[in-house]
Image (cartoon, rainbow, N blue to C red; front, side, top):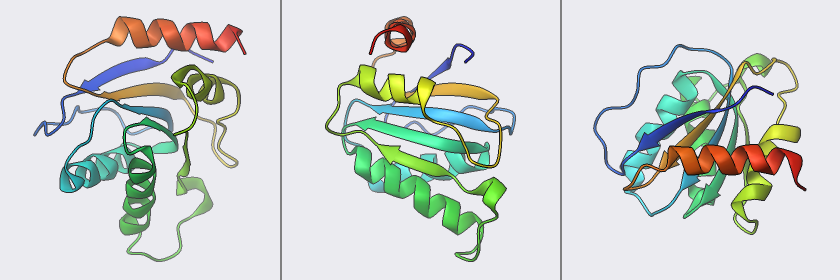
Length: 143
């Protein structure tokens, strides 16, 4: 697996990054609670950029999981979602972060599409990309 890219989002941020649409594996690391409407907007962006496997961890990770599921359904007007556009989602609320990272690196595969890149989406006041990328790398060797 290629090293992941890191994206920091401050809760409530108005602008979301512009990324090419491609099949992503994404780990959402939520360090604090956010407004439901904002989370839903981020989830719609997660679906729109092509994320096909989303792992959620941290504060309200089940809500993040559900928001991505709903965004995927909404993108298809709550009808049938083609297999190659179905977003697989998992939440990891009872595990340490390194377990969620390990899962992303070793288990998170889409059944129909090869995932081209991995993103860590960090929802927090402060950026800590170097630390989270280090933790991700360490998790891949230790389990």
